Length: 324
Image 1 (cartoon, rainbow, N blue to C red):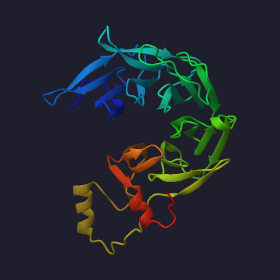
Image 2 (cartoon, helix red, strand yellow; image 1 turned 180 degrees about the vertical axis):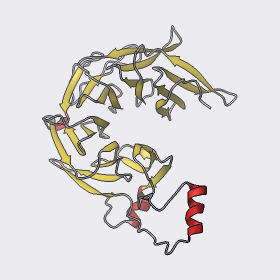
Image 3 (tube, rainbow, N blue to C red; image 1 turned 90 degrees about the vertical axis):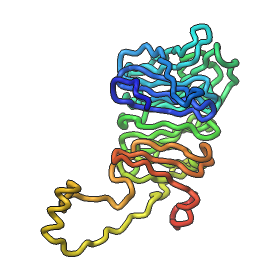
Image 4 (cartoon, one colour; image 1 turned 45 degrees about the vertical axis):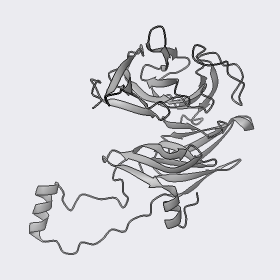
């Protein structure tokens, strides 16, 4: 039981290479958890130096550092200090104007993307000279001192709402994000930073990831994952990754059954049930098997308390309209 936080835990990430867990919370703290020889998880407090809640956390691809977004308009880039024998942080501040809602690392372990409630998506350098070699130039730029703003995107010319999720493509040349205006956008650094945007008639997406080099899986308030196909100059909506289950008619229900449901299950006939596995908003998508761009299975977690694992091969075999 990882029970050190005093307030709600807002984000958690597991480093598969090093078998370490990092957590952050509304108590403004982050902890790194390491499994010892006795099978117990030992904690180490991270010096975030923030005065508002921590909102999201992600290990870097090499797992030698991690990033924590917060409501303090700060991104904390955390790394292990050998002399101190603890986790310390460097801050990225400018020109962030509001809470960081999501972060994602570039495959080169240097660049980081951040979405925020000021309707912006930004790409920063998170280079820490104490723990890594000098970075090579990328499509996003060549000057990479710590905290340097490489690129900034606005969700739309009229604002477009909060940015809920960001994700670099497998090769790092594209950056996708989901906005509260029910849109999916992709910026292409290899094509003069062109931004492609698709406004859908769906509810807003809360999380997304690349399951194939040109296919994004996204989920949110629709309670079911959707695919989006990224072409060279456009984004198109694929399909839902779960077929609409037909409601089964229960026929005539006795008065006794009605009262039993109300008493035992807290249910009545006025309560609606969705025709999908998840009954409430999907809050996050995580890769279970495979890697970004070549995913075999991924999981979704929802406010209904369920964690569902989706097998792409099985889904593609069952659903004719699903192309993966």
